[in-house]
Image 1 (cartoon, rainbow, N blue to C red):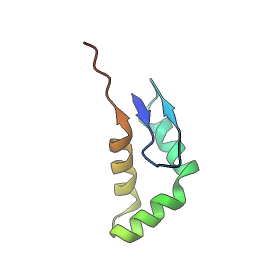
Image 2 (image 1 turned 45 degrees about the horizontal axis):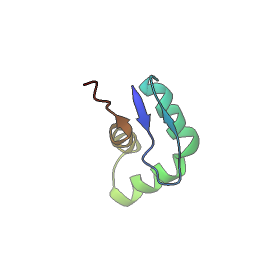
Image 3 (image 1 turned 60 degrees about the vertical axis):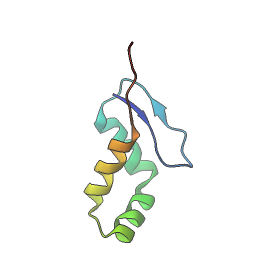
Length: 63
């Protein structure tokens, strides 16, 4: 899959990586931000991770 991190302060952009690799990036670089969102929105950290992954996926049109 192709990912372009949605966090404004981040320039992470990679093609052809697994979702688990992107999740590792999130946990290593954006853990504090995700915890803050989790508390602010009263959501589990897993829900915040899933939404962030979903919003960071980039679909490339092939035609």
